[in-house]
Structures are given as C-alpha cells and as structure tokens.
Length: 240
Image 1 (cartoon, one colour):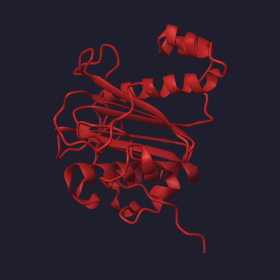
Image 2: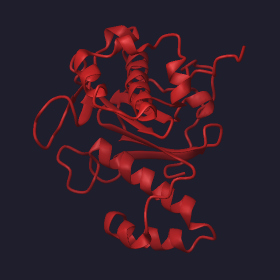
Image 3: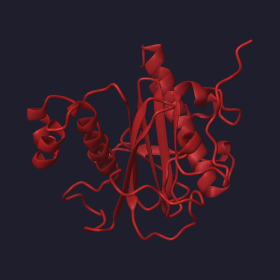
Image 4: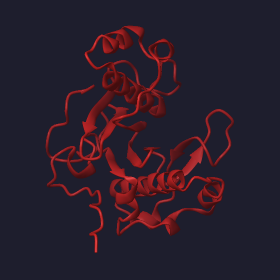
C-alpha cells in the first residue's frame, strides 16, 4: 500500500519554509501544500465546508479544479485554527466581494475574528492559505507557469521590473516571481490606491520557491503588527 502523502503542520521546532510553513512573523500563520497533502490531512475533511461553499462547488465541473478549491478552503481553516487556537471545525470563513458587496465570493474573512485577515490561493494541484492580524495576501503558482507576454505584464507590473526580468538569462522564472508578488499584494489590498492599506514601508513581502512542491509562493502582510512569530528562525529578506 502506498503511504499517504506528508501533510503540512505548524510545529514550533520546524525551520521557516520547511514542510509547507511559509516564513512570516507578526503572528501570521501561512501554509503551502499540494492538493493531495491537504485532502489527506487528518484534521481536514470536505464536510467542514459550509453549505454556501458546497453550493459553489456544485458548479465546478472539472474534478481537479474542484479538488483544488476544496483543498484551499480547508487549508484556510487549518491556518485559522492555528491562529485562533480553535479546532478547524470551529472556524467559519466567509467571503464578500468589495466591488458588489455580495457574500459568497471575493476576499475571504473570518466573521468571528474581525482583527484577523485571511487569504487563499490555488493553482493546478497547489494550494496556499494565510491568516494573521491585519490584511494578508498569499499567492501560489506552479514553477512551470508563465504569467504572460511582456507587453501585457508591463501594463500590470512596474515596467522597469519587467524589463529587468526579461534581461535575465531565463526570463520566465523571474517574471513568474514578479507575478506572484503582485497577486499577493493585490489580495492583501496593498495595491496602489487601495483604501485601508498600509502606507509605504509598512508592507512585508516574502517570496520564494518551494522546490519540493514545484511551486513559487508569495506572502504579503502589514509590518509592525503585534503577535507571536510563526517559527523561531529568521524570515528570508523581503522579495526573495
């Protein structure tokens, strides 16, 4: 019998970035995993999902994509559990769209814990989630993904950064790193002109490659917020 895949956890003795723990401080709890890892996690089960989440799943016809959505929502519950000290079945994330004001889609949040921010991401068998004080944003992409042609990226990202990435011997990975950073910042509400976002110098951005899962991950959150560190070691430099 094939053993089940390893599952992400948050033991305090683990070094930052190992076994799915996303390096962060300021009390931010964040994880990256494969969809298979999450679905095999002993604390997590699809039955934890709320009725509105199950209704949304009914509209997803591609089994792999459905599994990714389930895994991302379950991983968010695991992060919320670690952040609050409650079991995963005692936290109930919700979603609200800032554009239309309707529930059931848009940015996730924790109704019973308004001081905590929440974010999730999923892409082709990979998932990531984060919970912490204040706004947070997380994004994950497969190492092999390419975000788009440079002319399009220059309209979405700093043109100088895109040009520098294109000048690299292998532009694809450099452009992908720019993309996940942009997505994490956007999800956290740190984009230029976003209401309620922190000012310059108040944003922490961690980005790195998870070779074990063949993933590129970025995490954005507000700097200087109180809370206990995720793990005892130092986080990598911003933008790494």
